Length: 189
Ligand code: HEC
Image: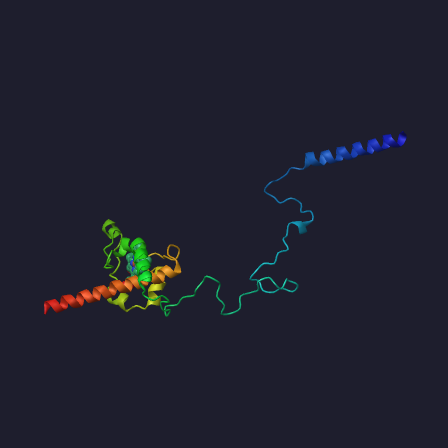
């Protein structure tokens, strides 16, 4: 009987101590709590692209080997050439993209008279100019992808393959313009 009373007393004391601890602790939500068994918080997963660390699982991706290219990504330089041939399907798709993305500024035929240029947007140079005619496909791809001065980058709006197909359409426009100019010259004679 006596031991039970002592036990009760001890339990009451523990309760009071715990309660007072709770009452005096002022939780600050801006600060991290005491970390208890932190292993539960830190993930064991291997971080990819960090190289093989001692003890890391061998199946985890290691650091990129020099010269490798991520899937779905193609590096480009100004020297790149168009991987697409001017087939009717590619030309049709190029014309479609041109009508949707380039036409507002560059105009239907490419001379730089798109509808927005009549509303205050600076008119782009003609795509039949010496510069655009002489530039490589790689350079044009570069301009569509990253933009140039007043022209914004179109990498996020136009898929990589469609950028190349659009260039096919621009080349077709240039060829048409060249043929029309030659015809006009012939007529003038
Ligand atoms: C919002 C208007 C706008 C749109 C849309 C646009 N461009 Fe341009 N583009 C310009 C302007 C302005 C320039 C001139 C930039 C400069 O001053 O160098 C330009 C320059 C260019 C040039 C270089 C011409 C040169 O002589 O330097 C090419 C090629 C070109 N654009 C192709 C395209 C193609 C292809 C598209 C569609 C995918 C497109 N642009 C969409 C405004 C636009």
